[in-house]
Amino acid sequence: MEASAEGMRALWISLAVLGVTAVVQAAVVAASGSVALLGDTMHNAADALTAVPLGIAFLLGRRSPNRCYTYGYGRAEDLAGVVIVLVIAASAAVAAYEAIDRLIHPRPVSNLLMVAGAAVTGFLGNQWVARYRIRVGRKIGSAALVADGLHARTDALTSLAVLLGAGGAALGWGWADPVVGLSIAVVILTVLRQAAREVYRRLMDAVDPALVDQVEAVMRETPGVLDVGEVRLRWIGHRLRAECAVVVNADATVLQAHQVAVDVEHALLHAIPRLSAAHVHTDPFAPEGVDHHLVLVAHR
Image (cartoon, rainbow, N blue to C red; front, side):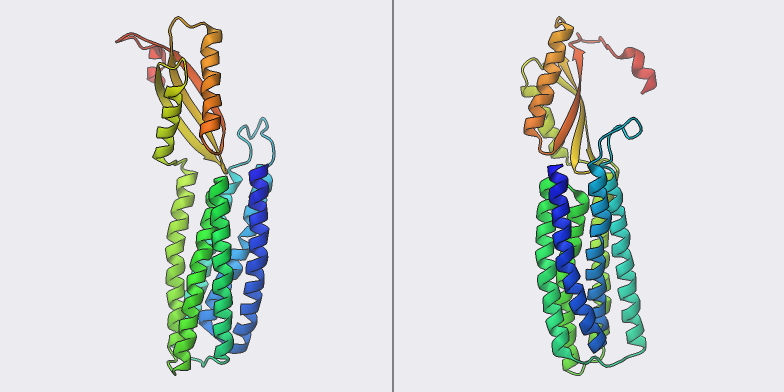
């Protein structure tokens, strides 16, 4: 609940900042006719609106597990990441279309000082939002929020590109504005690749291998653990779940083996950030050539 609340706060604050930025830029676009600034404005507006699916996902993630969704609703956050990727792709397509159209049908850009001021406003707003979203996203373990922050960081760079376009137009280079608009579309595609890769990895249950090493090390250090078996980790929203096996003394009672499993889970909950639960299976120590799971081999 605390992580979701912090994520929601980050979303609404960044929505307000980017919303104001997009409104200011849209007014300047109407007065100047700059397609470079139009591309930046659309990108900012799209970035602000991605707070909506993420906000819905965070709210869904607060719901308790039930007999249908036994792991809860944390995966809604990953689906929101897919929506964000689609929004980034759409903004890239629109920015590219407008820039190409302006190259084919040139039109002058007016109020260049206003365009430059709007570009600086876009840079400052996006840079602040990018830092804020990435920091909160990494803190609570939200890949979707980090992807949204990376999106905003690139928006900040594209705003500076608009400033270059305005400078070129001031020098009489009519092609500068649409060329910058087209370059913005290319940069957006770069962000799209990075964000899509991050969301894809989360959907495919990928985790940092170093995290697996850390889990194994904690398990080995737990009293009563003779060896470590299978370790599986997965993200569900911005929370981790673990499924793992440990080897215990073959003479241990059920109560003693259960206590080892509880101790392992307790140690993992303290050592692994954002871990919500760990299912620990205990196996009795087996001499060489003995397999206590032989009956299951044909099913794996």
